[in-house]
Image (cartoon, rainbow, N blue to C red; front, side, top):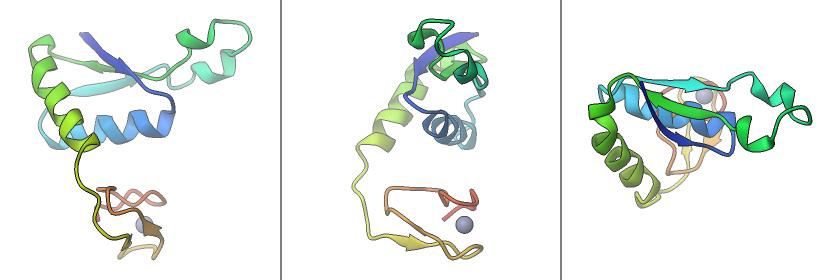
Length: 100
Ligand SMILES: [Zn+2]
């Protein structure tokens, strides 16, 4: 196991984990339930973390995330399933998780 990064929110962690899984990189989100411990543990210990099953995937995972974070944003898109509007940079619906 290899800790790739921390994220500011659980939603961001799941978004990046799903991005990695779709690219064939086995990744997991840790600290999913640590938010409830805030106040008892340092906040930096409660941030969601993304871990890789195979440390050898780290360079590829970083490249995938970097490309995702710097991808040009197209127009907003409506979800075919729930109808909610997601920003053009989203690959999945923010509301239901359907692939856009
Ligand atoms: Zn949707």
